[in-house]
Length: 467
Image (cartoon, rainbow, N blue to C red):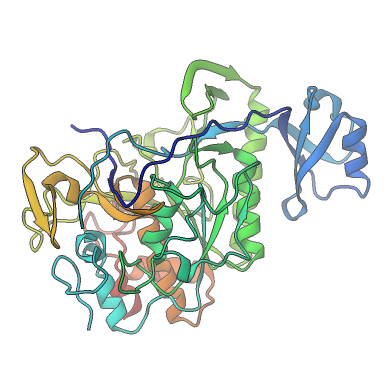
């Protein structure tokens, strides 16, 4: 079976990858029992640290210190605990294999649409996006926060819908608007799937009139980021009025609280570091506080289920975050096998070979793509010539162009786009529980009647969700 692969459409020369900045001090998560005292910052300074990020809404502060702040800050009153702000790899930022080539609504592969790559977006066929658009719903008035590795805000498919003023970065030294050039930027691929503009150019998002807020919580160079940035990003999204948060990212908080040591590119070095169990408990508490805050602010939270091919029903020793947090909808990935060979009779209900699954860990399924189709014969779809298996991946925007990828990271934005369509139909504001009920009511029930291992409550269906 092939490993996951990404394919790019080349539109300009590739740029070099830069090393991530080296931190001068250790970073710590500081949780208050309820609220921080008025002189908290001074107490932190007296203990040898300084506050870099302050999130009082959930009783969180990120503190940097040259010493062990867990010891020096322990005497500060009113704290629930202090933990290392562990950095973990949340996404694969780039793939080694690249290929290049030249270059009323209907679904792919023969939509006749003037967005010249729309006919290879089979995910829209799978969820019947065109059916929702024909009913008049395209996500207008809905704000979607993309918590990821930044977004190419200058991309012609992204620029019409990006809200630059509300976008933000929680990664030191990196802007939310990713560096220019042709490369696979994970957040850009995700954002385009949700809301690439229908502008007679490139691709179309599931909700092409929704507004995108880029919230950078992972490094665009390594795909890694500290847990504290994820929590701060969720709070920021809620505070700027996001209706939907998409988190196509995931990491594990292990029961034994042992993490891989990462190099500057986000790759495991082979070494591990062990922390006391209570530190991992603090990290989990922080993330749950952030998810609860966003949920209580009226945000529907969508997350990828993860790419470990793990049965989450029988993996209770570890916690997959954010997928297994309360108030978060976790999305498994499905894919056709050989869509380009027979696009009009393809089956879209196959669980992707890498996707996590399980009745307790997955709420819905959505198109994520796969590369299991055997052989390397060529196919032509929408005027594009490629190996047939490539078309089974998900096609979307990348920095400086367009390209394919696969993963539950690609499934989550399809579901987030459908959530945006539902909210748009209901006036642009909607209680998250009501959104989830509509997703459940209208999902395509491929598996056992509701709540099955593969699809959870069913595969998201855009047309049914708004009709």
